Amino acid sequence: MKRKTVIVVFSVAALAIAAVVSFWASSHPDGLEWAIEKHQVGPTGHDEAQETAESATAEEDAGEGLPSPLADYGVAGVSNEFASNALAGIIGSCLVLGVMLLVGYAVARRGRAGSPRPASGTEGDR
Amino acid sequence: MHIGTGLLSLPVAAGCGAVAAGAVAAGAARARKTLDERMVPVVGVMGAFVFAAQMVNFPVAVGTSGHLAGGFLLGLLCGWAPALLTMTALLAIQALVFTDGGLDALGANIVNMGVMPCLLGGAVRVALARRTLRVRVPAAAVGAWLAVVLGSAMVVLEFSLSGRLNTPELLWGMTATMVGVHTLIGIVEGVVTALVFSYVAKSELAPGLSGKEVTA
Image (tube, rainbow over all chains, first blue to last red; front, side, top):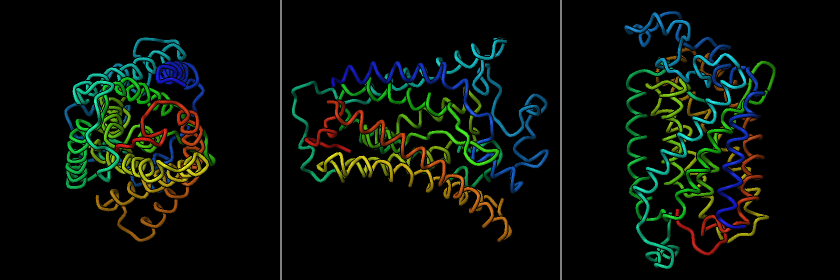
């Protein structure tokens, strides 16, 4: 299997999962949220961190971050739930890919195929 | 396992932020030396795959759910440094764009779901590079499970240090609930990690995966 095959397979898988499969994701709280509710260790009512100027808008979404058009993996203004979830998933996956292409190429070794790696594998890599 | 807004005390949030920042700086320095340009698209696509997989919550016990974390998998496939950069980007995007995980808890979330699992995955990658898949695939499963359980314990520790678990009953109750649920979630993480790893390990994806050259 070639490197390109891996790229294609996981691109398709990422899009299919983000756009389609995730629609049927469980809506139960995740393990941490569930534990927080069960033991009531979350912010009770108005906690210190929520007394910001935006607290009025943040109230309906207590305990979560800044308002965003893509909050909670949906696109604001898209009424069809499937489309909203799919768009959010595709945008998110592409964002991660895009950021990592930028970061990766900025950071990656300039060395090309064929140029020897500097003694890797023998220097006792951690 | 994303910690939300307002759950951590300022010192804990800042401390975790400092640890995360240091680790990411070390990861960037390491990746500068070891990350091959040809691997960049692979790392990016695997990051997108982990993002997508994280959207799929599966039901666990009654009334709760879990989703893949993926840090260990990325560490195993790409080495800890590119994996950590990817998880950091992913968690930052989730917090900033999707309101998943608090901004004040971003450092802690990077430590729990990035630094620790990526280092663990990278360590298994290097330690077992010359073993057969018969050894490496089960090791991938166990390691991924361990990373999830350990991460859940780290969340409890951070809550405790933030003064949220002030009675022994609360501390032990929260520990039991978190570690218990994540013991189950970790099994799915382990199975998925092993499946993806055994599929990718037969490719020429990463030099290390064929056992010839391994760079953490």
